[in-house]
Length: 166
Image (cartoon, rainbow, N blue to C red; front, side, top):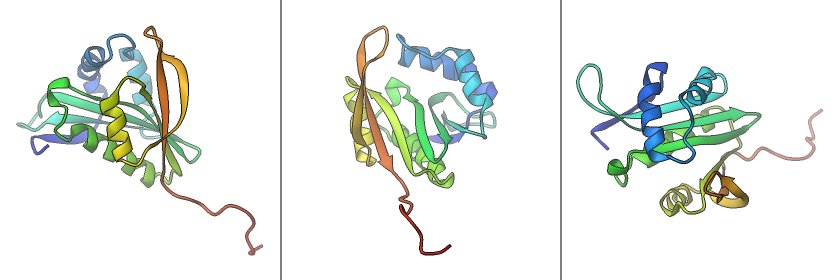
């Protein structure tokens, strides 16, 4: 991972991120416009980062990206993608860590995500980070009719009930 740096995603990154998105998720890739709309909410309710190869003054090629939505004490992983030839080197873990750290910083109680039922590698990563299965969204990923496994990781537990202080 020492040859990769994480930084906040900017509008200038969108063409590269979209190219990677269409390679990673050919059946259900987000459009560049959808990515732009997500980024427009940063930093208000969104947090997007890229993993970029370290190098030179202008940086290197984007090899991964991730996004988080946060509202009402809940955070949702919107996307995580890592170029196929760079998987297994800790980039996905670093991206997920950055999202969880941001959720904590924003005082979220939990982080949710959906993962394709047939994506065993991603599910193992999320389980390693303390995410547990809480549900299934049938035929969520279209047009392939693949189920989504809904996962959650609790972050902070706030007291529930009545307080003695008035």
